[in-house]
Length: 219
Image 1 (cartoon, one colour):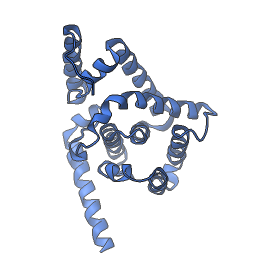
Image 2: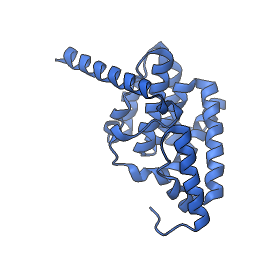
Image 3: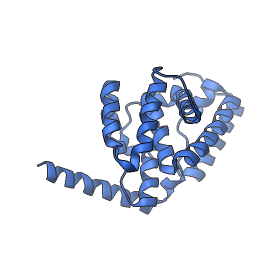
Image 4: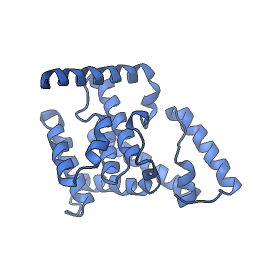
């Protein structure tokens, strides 16, 4: 993390940005100061606009829940726990809200996957996102890793979109990776859906019930 006090105009921008994110998503952007210190206000604003554009394109191509899951995994491969957990939480909430179903990957399990070797983590992701419902996302997840690891170059529009997602979250992870040891239980959803508090409570209860049922079945 870079040291030093920001100039006044930058501190004012950070204060305004945090106020804005509090209103929009329900919590202040904890990394805003580090973003501005590292990249400057102009670059940070350009990144924010580009991220919003990519999110819209991901949602149009794959769906709202799937878009957040792909962002989460871009951050996952970049080593950032905050973004990986937060965006997976967001995707899972979108799915639960729209379809009444739990996503294949409990966001709280991301730290466990992050300590695995890449091949092992990818294998588990492929097993989780299996079946007809997830066939398209399954392929996108594999391709995302192959592009991220340099095994392939983009070959089509989907590849280019996934590659852009990877690149943009490499940029953000330069600052957010400072939260690598954070407890996944305290990471909030990374969109306004987190302000639906009753939805969040129902989702948590459903997760706990599912975990309890799995334990009984395994025992």
